[in-house]
Image (cartoon, rainbow, N blue to C red; front, side, top):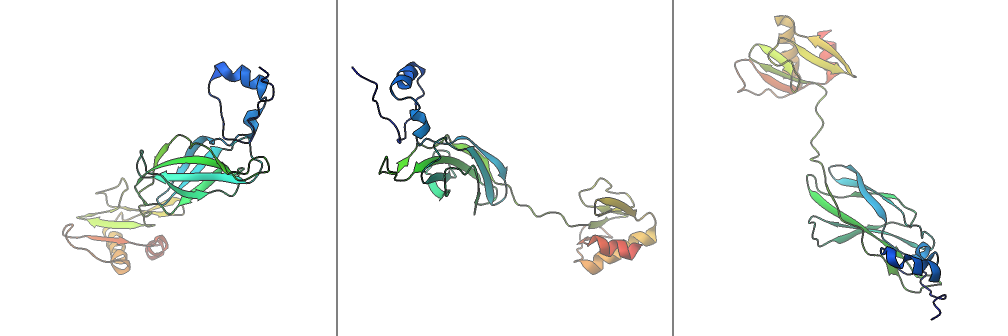
Length: 221
């Protein structure tokens, strides 16, 4: 049988069986260079509260119009919904937004090649393996200065000086300490009271406020 004229170009075919590789090399050399297959190396390079940055390796058959369709689900078993299709097959990264914080997401990507002179049909590959990820919580960033008075001590919330008679003020990456004596501690709390809402219930002498760093620094300088 003459098997030298096997024509496999411009389809969605791939071979993962080494035993038939010699046959394909003889009958359809280079056929893999014209196949619409799934992209490889799909990863989540960054996860945020409402978006995911996806990256992958584009397929070798990047000529003719087409793109990568990103499918998303909140379950590993689906159902998967098509979220977006890239404008071409050269694209290797995409930011998928409009997501929910603190949510598990499962992503897979398929390739499509639209009608060509060699194949009038749109060819769509099998999807890539599922990639699992999770968006972040999206917790707000801390205020520039958080002053808390508890009993006789003043400290920056979340710091390491709780219970001591000082407050660490962070200004553009540098630290400045205040509150080594009673008048200065009283003044720091007075500023906190002026700048934020005073809250009772933490002790006999307490306040909890968000104070701009420059306000506190200027007032205590």
